[in-house]
Image 1 (spheres, helix red, strand yellow):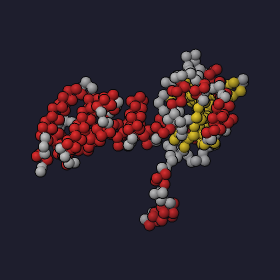
Image 2 (spheres, helix red, strand yellow):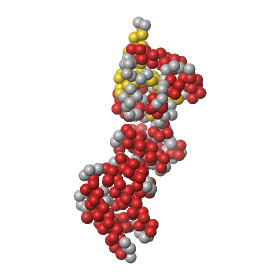
Image 3 (spheres, one colour):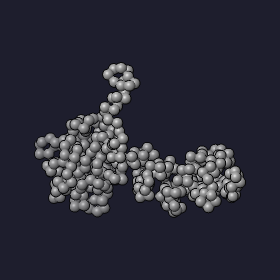
Image 4 (cartoon, one colour):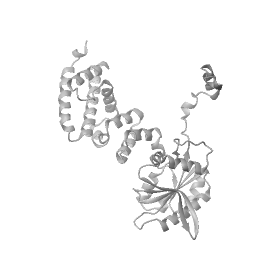
Length: 345
């Protein structure tokens, strides 16, 4: 049996053409949401026909050719994109969630979400964040690959004891643990000033890792208190929280005295920089390592809002990949065979 003999195929094709023409008109008013909804409907109908009529995979290829012939100015009917539509409909089983959630983000980002994420919970989380923060596709890819869902809101803080609701929840959600600075060209033994300088040098990537809303004020920001000079490692202003954010960078494990020093800085910033319309200044201690219980005790009785997070200079290698990576000796042996080692190139 040929594809043209499949039961219901010609009727299905005529119906699709009519709906596509209608969607083309609607698209002039609401380009993205109508297009995404149309793609979901096509994917749903392909799934239904394959289940009910027994259509095989080759029908998608024929369908792509027929639709491209009928709509030469539309580039969304390739075989690959029709397969994405099918996967899209498998991922989202109701029209309601398409209209209320994923229809609000571009098709390319929807493809990223369904191909890079497996669980519905994670797909919904990233879709909502993409809408909330207006992420571009590269930013969405970065946030997925950096495991943002597992890091967001994970810092140790005393915000619920020191900030009113709902600011305490918003501030807690703003922080991550750990922060990943794998874009820096420094080693694991780098000193604080080296890391600090590199972070400012790569300020765009640093701000991306910090998250939406951070505005950079300065590094080694000078404060004069009681006739003495003090310098804040990094000072930011958060546009959504409407407050200053003081970041202290430590190239060691967390120590309780770090919290006391930061508490002092927050008081100084509140007294000298904070406007009457600003919310209380927030502090974040970024450490190479931290013991959760020690950090919790150190923050427990502070009267200023402080968080503690770890940072990583090199992205962690997933455990399931470590055993598959070659050793240094294996690499050297292979390179020597092609004349690279010891100046043979």
